[in-house]
Length: 220
Image 1: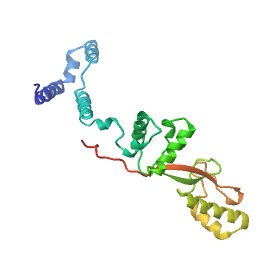
Image 2 (image 1 turned 90 degrees about the horizontal axis):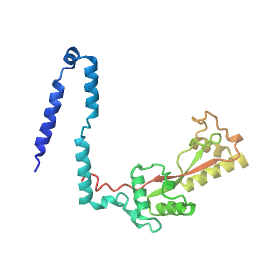
Image 3 (image 1 turned 90 degrees about the vertical axis):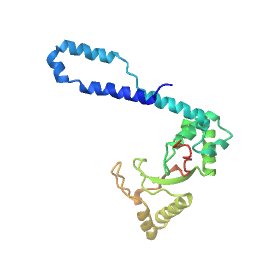
Image 4 (image 1 turned 135 degrees about the vertical axis):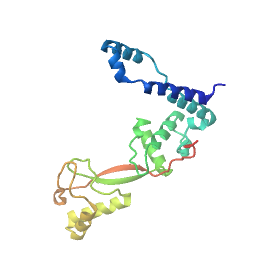
């Protein structure tokens, strides 16, 4: 059996030997051509990265010990999806694991480009409380920057009612509330948003992650 401590000690001894080499003396004792040749010779040696090799071996052993790591394990509820392949579910599990709580999940297209299936997946994730659906008002000029907080469907309906009351009936109280709820200046396109000149509010639907990742296998 190979002695692991001897491997490490031998590597340390070789590193210590390299550290003792005085480059200034080499420059004094050898020509530039000699040193360039030695440099090229060093680059021609494929130095083994033992740290990386050992990490890869340990990871391989971990997968044999915990084969569940090869499947859906970070969001176990995804195993229940009946309309996706195992490979797609693993890809989805991996994608969601890279998102943080409250993150706008925009990667449904990574798993399927079929519109109906994409919609089905979105509805399933909402039903299973993996993601939720929220709404924001976007700048009417650039149609990019969010100019409101994230809202539920009920809050969106309330905001739309306020806007309609102001536009159709001149309700100043509604305007005051709109003024508190909306950012009437876009930091992206640097345009003022004047509600008197807007015929409608532009909304964007976003889906944010609300399920916590299963971390049971993180530190094994």
